[in-house]
Amino acid sequence: MIKLKEIQSEMEFCMFTVFEESDKVFQSLQAGATGYILKHAAPVEILQALKELVAGGSPMNPIIARKVITEFGKFKAQSEANAALEILSDREQEILSHLSQGMLYKEIGTELGITTGTVKQHIHKIYKKLQVNNRTEAINKYLGRD
Image 1 (cartoon, rainbow, N blue to C red):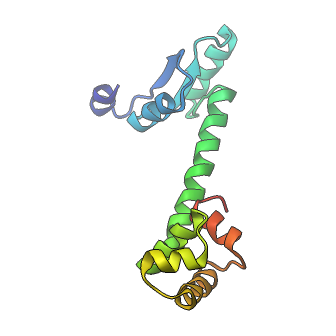
Image 2: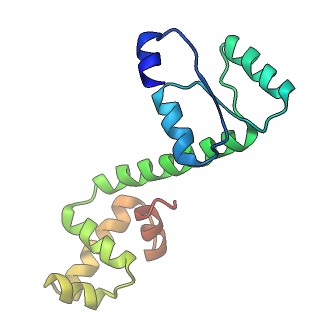
């Protein structure tokens, strides 16, 4: 399909397949497919999908649409988490990583060769930068579960 899309950029492509796996769906969409219909769809649904495609739509089975929305939500959360973490210094990210592994302040200090008081100072700065109030909120933001 990639070569066809390069040759016929104005042509619309709709995948018609038995594959429901997220990686197959996203590979197809990244390659230029504008629709994704499963072969077990009823003939009337397939015809409707073709009409929708010709009319400029992006037909998808509800199962596939849900996968796309779910993955987009994960991607958005991870993007936001990455953006939030970019404001942290390398040391703060390192401390947050240890914190997310369940380490205590004293253990983090020992691991990094700093005092527990210094760890606490870094934690306070992390909370302020991430706009959180506690360890759980900071870890959730770090893991993209915000």
